[in-house]
Image 1 (tube, one colour):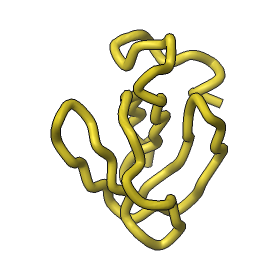
Image 2 (cartoon, one colour):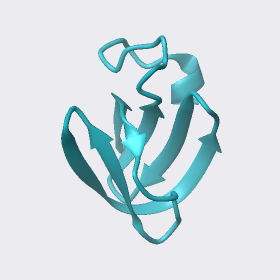
Image 3 (cartoon, helix red, strand yellow):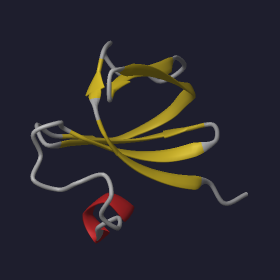
Image 4 (cartoon, rainbow, N blue to C red):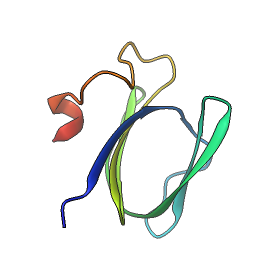
Amino acid sequence: MKKAIRVISGTLMCPLSVGAPALIFRGGQYIQTSTVVRIHSVTPRQTRFETLNTQYCLLAPDSPASADTPMSAECAA
């Protein structure tokens, strides 16, 4: 099954943990993902992780990249 890929700008509200959903604050709303199955990378500018349904590239709110821009190779890897 090919998973959806989402690039969004937001803030993790809780530490990311395999086996638990991620809670993201974005645009004045909270988003709860499905269960995290893998954490790919965590840097000050972005967090890449995978849930049961989706691959996420979460950009820090002050990141120069916009969530509306196409996914970069850095996020897609």
